[in-house]
Length: 151
Image (cartoon, one colour):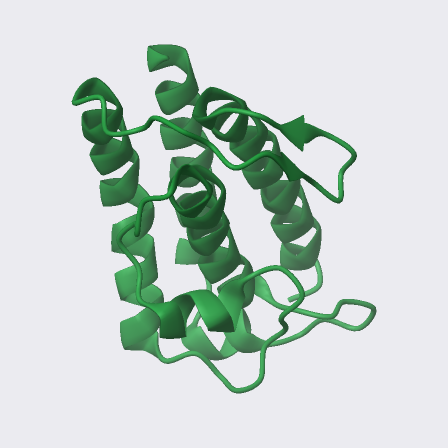
């Protein structure tokens, strides 16, 4: 499991380093040909991990329903995201990896509600969710790298 958490930490570090070079205005800009922006991708990565790993395990997770509703699958940016919210999301991207590792170590994860992803993979356990989530986050990092070139 440590490798799963390490991969997530490195991916999230790369995401944060990528966005550090941009202003809040640039992070909120939706490039031509895209349906979202760098700021939305930050929130989406954060929210998706909580939904796949915690909510499908029957646990509440660490994010508000309001935040989840803004960044979950199927959403798009509806308004600019403030600098304060971007900063909070970046902080949570890092702290929630460690929190998930601690929760795993404490045995908080048990039952899991099977979930067929739109990617074509069916998740049947929390371990499946954590492994798939790393692929999901890497995919969004790739989208973000492509968007970066258009800013």
